[in-house]
Length: 465
Ligand SMILES: *[C@@H]1O[C@H](CO)[C@@H](O)[C@H](O)[C@H]1NC(C)=O
Ligand SMILES: *[C@@H]1O[C@H](CO)[C@@H](O)[C@H](O)[C@H]1NC(C)=O
Ligand SMILES: *[C@@H]1O[C@H](CO)[C@@H](O)[C@H](O)[C@H]1NC(C)=O
Ligand SMILES: *[C@@H]1O[C@H](CO)[C@@H](O)[C@H](O)[C@H]1NC(C)=O
Ligand SMILES: *[C@@H]1O[C@H](CO)[C@@H](O)[C@H](O)[C@H]1NC(C)=O
Ligand SMILES: *[C@@H]1O[C@H](CO)[C@@H](O)[C@H](O)[C@H]1NC(C)=O
Ligand SMILES: *[C@@H]1O[C@H](CO)[C@@H](O)[C@H](O)[C@H]1NC(C)=O
Ligand SMILES: *[C@@H]1O[C@H](CO)[C@@H](O)[C@H](O)[C@H]1NC(C)=O
Ligand SMILES: *[C@@H]1O[C@H](CO)[C@@H](O)[C@H](O)[C@H]1NC(C)=O
Ligand SMILES: *[C@@H]1O[C@H](CO)[C@@H](O)[C@H](O)[C@H]1NC(C)=O
Ligand SMILES: *[C@@H]1O[C@H](CO)[C@@H](O)[C@H](O)[C@H]1NC(C)=O
Ligand SMILES: *[C@@H]1O[C@H](CO)[C@@H](O)[C@H](O)[C@H]1NC(C)=O
Image (tube, rainbow, N blue to C red; front, side, top):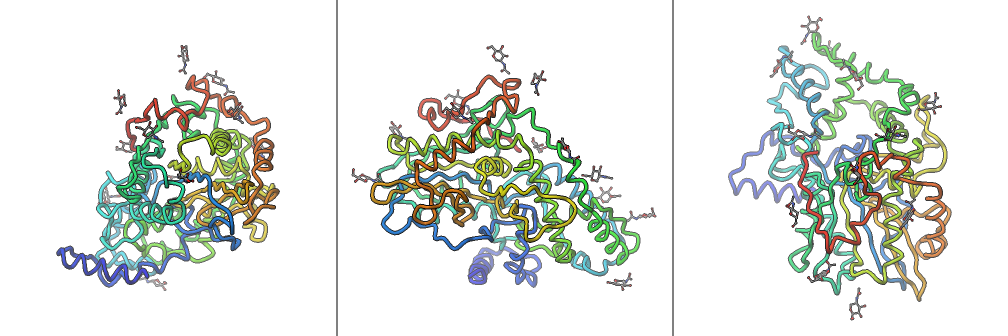
């Protein structure tokens, strides 16, 4: 499948006179997908690996009545801050005067750094800005394929709808993902993109509540996460320095090489840097990311349930109004942490067992951050009716994930009334505005964009973040 795709691209590039650098290496494209899930959500999209085998189509004799999607932007270049550090590590390597030995030997081979322009930092990868014209993992392509798959499954919900609204934050890459998705829906739909400001002044009227939460302290649980041994990073640096005398890589460089591996795949289609790591090192890195996310943006930090309640509450309200509202399809695009906050409030991946830093728990770890929010992550809320009864269910990255305490409906869905009770219990005592001290940055204490977009027309200026 992928090889056919590459063959077609090759033919096209040849026809257009585009030269493909390092042609001998393109055979690597598609061979690294097994490690995507160990790369902290920075590698290209992959479906949820813990699929229970429940089909995501409407169950037998049931019909969808509403679908909501909360999606992450697609594959991208590193952020400014990690990009700056990556450039410094690249300079260290590029200034090394001897030939490289060992797993870095690929750098001897006419290697060009994968970030071709500092202006690409923070941006979605596209066919245009990719380090390799054969890159199949662009954020652009991911959004377009997602849109076609969405239509294949849910187009009946758009049957009587020619114009409808889609929502995105005003982060440029988030906006671009929404734009590519909309383009791929095709010209028969007149979609108006509502660009909702993610600045703190938006208060509660946001798809990215974290930005409106001045009380959030990302370092609150450093006392736990810092206890995770970073010996593996030291070992990587020692190994590479030993193979390449005079190359003074530090453990911070080792940490960045994982980013290099992940982001290079989204830009070049493959990364030789991924060959530097042993499987054990990938597992430790991945678990460290689960651990730090759990205590920074997930179930391990009490405040996160309050943050995610802002969006969860709105989605529950949309479900309740599915009969009255003009739209049956609600598509919203945002950032990874916002989706993680939302999932934390729902509790889909919270089994109540706190993660600990003493070792990698295998049997006891249900919280795999990168499985929940890879690039292009997509959390669907399905509502369907089967002989006059309604049910609600979640689909995370193509896998149906039942609510543990409510799955008696068809396809392990939750009967609508029980779902609302479940939601009330999940949101008991939660208060986004109070927990986050939102009023210190904004007077807006309600999420209204799903209901007032018709009159307000959201069109916030795009931000490079
Ligand atoms: C290494 O190379 C870069 C550009 O190639 C240069 O800016 C930098 O000063 C050099 N030296 C070090 C120690 O990074
Ligand atoms: C579209 O309109 C027809 C005719 O009014 C109706 O029977 C059908 O249920 C509608 N479809 C949706 C998805 O609302
Ligand atoms: C569709 O367009 C009509 C006429 O412009 C407008 O009244 C209606 O609110 C729009 N519906 C949506 C869902 O945007
Ligand atoms: C870590 O810090 C938090 C507060 O930020 C505190 O509640 C918790 O008890 C501390 N845990 C440990 C193991 O010291
Ligand atoms: C190259 O690395 C190998 C181990 O991978 C080591 O045995 C050898 O001594 C190294 N050569 C040099 C010149 O450092
Ligand atoms: C590595 O460190 C040694 C000792 O501090 C120094 O002499 C050498 O120039 C450094 N090499 C590079 C490539 O920075
Ligand atoms: C290494 O990384 C840690 C964690 O990000 C940071 O606190 C520290 O300042 C870095 N050290 C250097 C020398 O850059
Ligand atoms: C949910 O929204 C309703 C209004 O629609 C509000 O009364 C309630 O406080 C909100 N709950 C949370 C947890 O935000
Ligand atoms: C809330 O914000 C105000 C104004 O910035 C500040 O004085 C207060 O300490 C903050 N409270 C909390 C709990 O963070
Ligand atoms: C909230 O509203 C008051 C009164 O309109 C205004 O003085 C204040 O600056 C506003 N605060 C914020 C954070 O926007
Ligand atoms: C958004 O729309 C309003 C009203 O049409 C207009 O005044 C404003 O300049 C627009 N803002 C942007 C960023 O386009
Ligand atoms: C990243 O850098 C660009 C260009 O310097 C700047 O416009 C943008 O605001 C930066 N974004 C962040 C999040 O720092």
